Length: 469
Image (cartoon, rainbow, N blue to C red; front, side, top):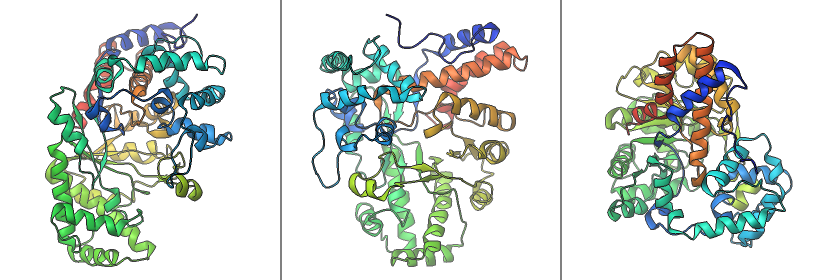
């Protein structure tokens, strides 16, 4: 039976561009994986227990999968997605797997199909296409392998050749799993990243109580502006103790502000009292992005800004299932005007790194590449989320390289909760970049030796350098 993935996947169909892409890919295929931003669960590495079953590992936590099925009428409860009120959902892994297999055809042409076929073939040794008829055979094969010691989280971490992976924890997290990893003596490098959304966004559920808790765990008076800012500094320092080299900020927009200390303090006082003024709440988020940038200038944490998602677009799904259930939708995003207050403050700092992501591809050539192509503090994150796809990656390179070059970008990050898909995602990125470089060589725009050097930079070195890993 033919393999599920082709050796020339995503390369040119023929000619010199194909042979060049093959050679470039061969030089980077086996490089270690640097995963500087993601959402895998640190308790996996801490406890190192067997994964429960194929469905819990590969389907239930992956919003790329269940959002597609939901769009075609499959209820989230049928896929084992937990409800907030504890009402019953499907718990039979085999039943979930069968349902997924019956609908696998829906993923034709999508990056999810590429990733999933890669996982089936390269991780579990399966070369039979996933169909309803093959569902039980696939399930049994995977379930049997997951009981083996060499399929536990730490063994897979090493098998995947992961050099370092960053998880992402909220500002109030006690980092107990990271402490357990550190104290275990295991050599795998798992670091955290500081995600303060719950204590910088007045629209985040439980915001006032979150600030109270921030004060409790830091010993700072978060009823005052000075105490609140000091609490952030303390938490950032605590996260650095567990390997953090970056902070991560998922704001609705890229809007920033640069208020005077007096004005910021006054705004904080109104927000702390529970201001219902939408303009004030928006301004507070904007001010806090600049405050976080100033802290990064001081403490060295790389700052990642991920704006432009209308989070939890369906209130009924949010109320029943909570966050991160596939209903975060891209919106148009301004960067030139929105970032100017932050850039006026710290944009010329050569030792600061602010990595910008976008879900609005129209901003690549018009705004993001020109900004990153001149401000020393700015770098461009890779094609992200909905654009973490072959087409999205190609568009990113085509629209940013002419203005920002390669070295104002930061390589690739997989940004995933689906641990087994990490090698697949990096493989797709490496293939797309090698194909792009091969095209530049074939068009006589790049020397072949330069392409080989760049292939290694894009696959490995740039991420390590940008994230200070």
